[in-house]
Image 1 (tube, one colour):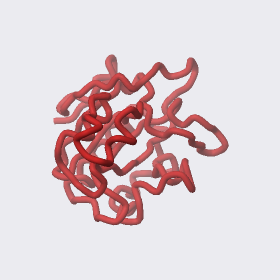
Image 2: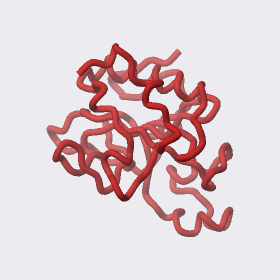
Image 3: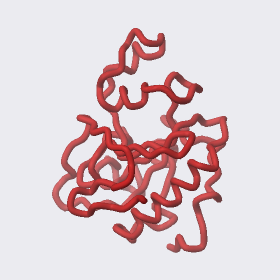
Image 4: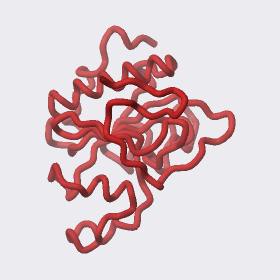
Length: 185
């Protein structure tokens, strides 16, 4: 059963795989945004160890031709939801994960400072799975209990905070599957 350990800001009942790609949130910044992403490594392929390896700086450049350009990136997310619904947490919620890059929300830049990043294993043009939507909804509910400010209008896609630079979670993501009447503004 998923439950948030508020002291450590780690979710209990999920897989933990700590990433070095994180930093302290700036003093005074509070969590005010939830960013949904989509990722697959190699592009369009699911399963395998490559997302974990990318987020923990252990991706072998030679494992796939695509990896030569990304293996040295310093990126992470707080959570990943795999195709079958397995959740992995990489970064404590007390820290910022490096998921948003150059980004802006409601006139504020540096979204990593005040957001939680959730990656879904997938790509822009392949529908996400029922298991992913179920787990994402559960995770959102847990996070909203800790941070009620995470209303529907503060749950966005990577493409919303980095338009022109990012397209994920893409047109295959069905926002109606996570937005319900319980998410009020």
